[in-house]
Image 1 (cartoon, helix red, strand yellow):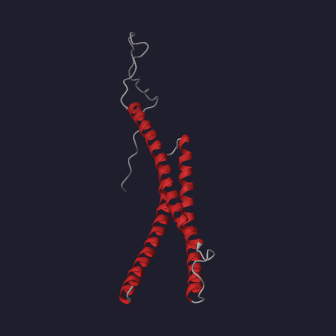
Image 2: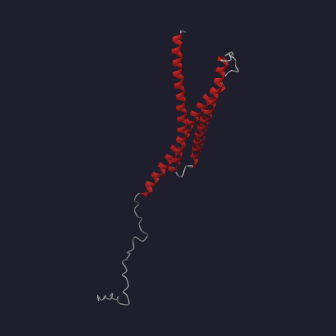
Image 3: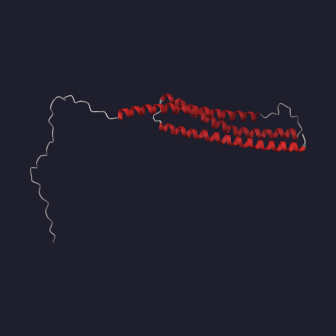
Length: 193
């Protein structure tokens, strides 16, 4: 490879590595924000569906567990990423400064694969959490709709039932108040003196 071709290669590779780093940062931020936001959303959903169907509470609990796992695995991947960078610096130093052989099996960076697996695990846990939260919401929405339709039927106009003594003539009327025994006195007039 010519010197100018190598410069083009290293420049392109540097740009792609920087883009990859930015994408990884954005993904980690998005997973943390979405998982934490999903916790908040699930709390709002719980308030809307009070009381909650007892057979759906397990879906909610599983959703919370998977959101927590997603957040924790993302946070752990931050630490393993730092360890991967430190290990890669050691490997580069060994090859370029200490002139050690690149092909040594001990000279691998296991933290790279751990970080990649944690990222995949975090995304998977988040998706599973969303699925369980969706099951919980759908089941409770159906129950609320059924309850509301039953309430509407009960709240509608119901004509009064026929009285038991419908055939008898009932004489009712107003009872006038009793006349007072003492006449009501007029208020005394005030002198304007």
